[in-house]
Structures are given as structure tokens and as C-alpha cells.
Amino acid sequence: MSSELAISVRGLGKQYRIAHLNERHTRVTDAALAALKGVFNPQKYETFKALDDVSFDVRRGDVVGVVGRNGAGKSTLLKILSRITEPTTGEVRLFGKVGSLLEVGTGFHPELTGRENIFLNGSILGMRERDITRQFDAIVDFAEVERFLDTPVKRYSSGMYVRLAFAVAAHLNPEILIVDEVLAVGDTQFQDKCLGKMKDVSSQEGKTVLFVSHNIAAVRALCNKGLLLANGKLVHQGSAEEVLSMYATRAPVAVSSHVRQNGAYGLQLNSLRINGAETAAGSVDFLGPLTLEWELESGEATPLCIPFLRWHDANGVVLSEVWGPEESVDFQRYDGRFSFRLALDSMSLMPGRYFVDFYLHDVAGKEVFSAPECVHLEVQPVALPGAPRAYESRHGLLRLASQLSRGIAPTGA
Image (cartoon, rainbow, N blue to C red):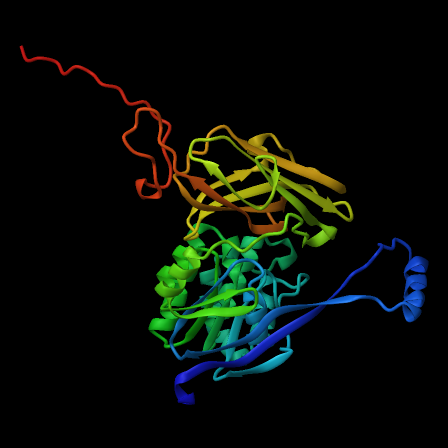
């Protein structure tokens, strides 16, 4: 039985302690005094279960899509499988060498060149120098970074980082390939190239792939098996179609009006409003007006950055993207509380469930803050005046702005 398994997980759990700080310290003396007071007044902690009693098996050659809302435990699971972090409880057994791509730049040294980082990252993944040398040309060709091979990677864009990191992970012959959401950073052409490589790795070479993505279309095209996580628990394991169907139909997880989603520079998403109501999950009538508002807070000055919004449906199909400059919101630094407001005169998406991702990007296009699926929106069916029936989800994704007129056909001579 074990000869057919690539991964065996039993009773896996991961807990974190979250400290509740009453105040922020800007000076070393204040922090030292607070630490001294803490001896007599112990700090309060909250226990958070990122994973709770998760058990499953993955057979050799399976391509498994791991799906779930943000905070479901997907990235924590992959970090444990990649041996980046240790589980609190439970057991993981891996039958084969693991190659992982979890975050942009993981395993890279920013001061080293692309050439040097190929050998560094390959060594971290457990490959001998002669094996890396044998695959070197294929890695460079796949990553399409030959021109910048002797440039320090700190000067690479996030897309170039991902191309090189994926190329290294995929070409150094891991028996188990673990890929997190990072492919979303690359352009569409390169994403397709990566998906094709993962198909080849699984179908032609018999390797095992674990793939985490919010792009449901990519999961459906690539994976034959699936895992659905929710609130740290394994909700369902089965075929990819079964898992994706359950994921698409599950009611959205209740989202607190104070999201408190942390990012770099002390960035937090404090609250969301849909048509003036403080909520992250709401509804709007088809062709009705919509206003979305995000209130954030920064603990220190951010770099120059702009908001970036992505709309997608329950299957992960991207419907629209909005960049700040297109809406006359220029690059600037933020410190303290600030907010953004997006107004639509008419909701042209057909009735159904949709999600909005919110990001802040710097001038180089690198992600400064992310809150994927922070807005859950239900578009309600509406019958237009004079129409024989209401518009529903079966009528497509959106209603084009158009004018339909009737003319008189010309008569023959």
C-alpha cells in the first residue's frame, strides 16, 4: 500500500499563539519597560488553529488541487508538507523528494545573480551540482531570463522571480511538486506554460503534484483529485469535479466587519462597506448601482503604491481588473488611516455569486498588501420593464451595453 502512496497525513494540526498588544512602542526604552512590566502582568494570548485534525492520502501520479477560502489553512498545510514549519500535532509521511514553490523569492538570495541562485536553490532542494549543471540550460530556457542571468535577482520583477523559481523547482526532478498561489504573479502566457509543465510532470513522468490556487479553471484543467479546506478542517476529499462543485456552492464564510488582515508596513484592512452598509458579504440588484469602500490603516509610511482590484466568479474566472491610475488614483505613500471607494452606476454582471480581490501594488508591480476575496457579492435577478422574464445566471456572465432596434427590410425592385 505504502508503495502506491506519495503523501500520507494523519491527524495533522497546527496552532499559533496570537498576542494581544495594548500599545505600540516607538522607542527601545518603552519596549524594555513594557517587557519588565510583563513579568508581573503576563501578556494575554489567543490560540488560533490554522489546521485541525486533517487526514488524507495522496497516491503517486495524482495531481491534487487544494482549494478553500482565505484563511482555510491551505498555505499552512503546504508549508508543513514542505518541512518549512513543524506541525503541532499529527504525522506527515512523504515517500519521495519534494520540490516546492510557495512564495516569491523563497530560497533565493537577493544579492546573488540568477545563475548563482539556480545552484543555490537547487542545493536547497537537495540536488547535486552535476544534476543542476545537466538541467541548467533547460531551466534558463524555460524561465526566459537568459538576458538577465548574471544580474542580481534583487533587480528582478516579481514575474521574473516566479519564472526562475518555478523553472528550478520543476526541472530538478522532484518526485512530489508543491506549488502555491504564486503562479498568479506571472503573465497569462507563462501561467499556461507552467500548467503545461505540471501536466507533463504528472502524466509523462508519473510525479505527484499539489496545487493551491483560487483560479478554479486552472485547477479543473490540471487536477484529477481535490481537497477542500474550510476553517482549518478538511471538508471533502475526492475527484476534482466533486471538490470544485462543493467549493462553488458552499455559502461564503461569514466575514467580520473588522477584517484586520495584516500586511507589510503594519497595513491592516479595518472595514468594508457595500452600498454604505458595513459588511464584507452583500447583495445588489442586477443593473443596480453599487458602491464598495475599503478602509485601511498603516503603521508606518508605505512605499509609493496604488490600489488594484480583481473581479472573479465562483469558478475563479477573472471578469475584470481595475488599476488605480485608470481611475485617476496616482501612486503615493500612505501612513495612518486611508480609504478607497469604487462606484458602479450599473451592475452589468448577470445574477450570481462574485468576489472582489483587493491589493496594493508598488511602482514595480510588486504586491505590498493583499486581501483576496475580501468582498462576497450576490447579484440578484431583476425583470426589466417590458421583459417577459428576469435575467438569471444561465443567460451569461454580463449584459453588454447595447441598443437593439427594428428596421424595415427593403423591397425588391
